[in-house]
Amino acid sequence: MDAVFKALADPTRRRLLDRLFAGNGQTLGALCAEARMSRQAVAKHLALLEAANLVATQRRGREKLHFLNPVPINEIAERWIGKYERHRVRALADLKKNLEGKSDG
Image 1 (cartoon, rainbow, N blue to C red):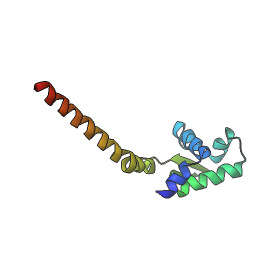
Image 2: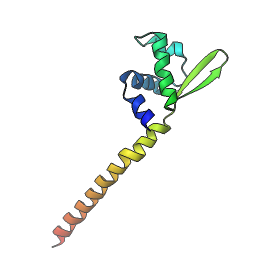
Image 3: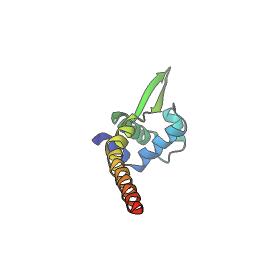
Image 4: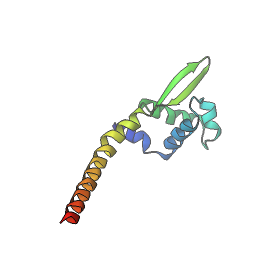
């Protein structure tokens, strides 16, 4: 999970993930087209995203296609956001119960 947080900490990598979300299965060349950096820099960012399992690749002939893998992001949501959300929902349910109890009396 540390690799995922490290990968997501960089705004350039988040933009690359957004680009893959908008159109999955892009080549390095396609991802470089809108990036304001060298092909080598984009390749390094993609390698870090791939190492964090946020990007999966598939070879098609001479092309290497890049696909967004949302599973690690979902795991973060489940582990970190989900547990905080449960407490908030429980607190709202308790508040509702207390308010309903006061209106009965």
